[in-house]
Length: 132
Image (cartoon, rainbow, N blue to C red; front, side, top):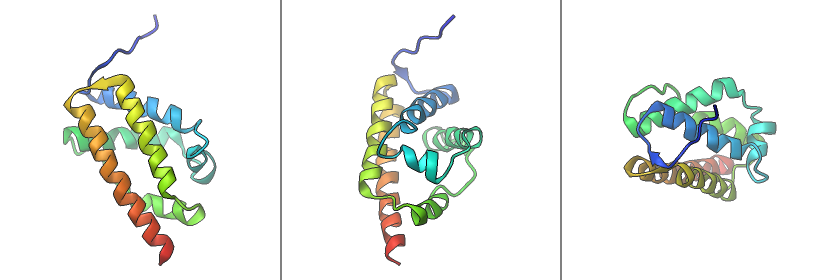
């Protein structure tokens, strides 16, 4: 039996996993940012996805399941290939689109809001790092 996903409130880790999986399915195929994941970082998805589940679970539900330095892991990638504003804009577009296709409610809105702040900070820090 195939599971059909319908619009719902984001309330559980299962919801976060669905969001993150759906988002990265788009990212890896995207011409603007997919190469960062596929070619530059050569992401090990078996390790990366659970970290992202925990990252967003911590941000949205306060579970504190994420352990790591999300900014720090991006600096080496930025040294190999500049992460520019257009890349963050595309990341945000894919994230927002994925949320709006799957979720409604306060946590969905918060996931968009938090991602916008993360992207602004990361774009600033990556640009600054390239200038130093």
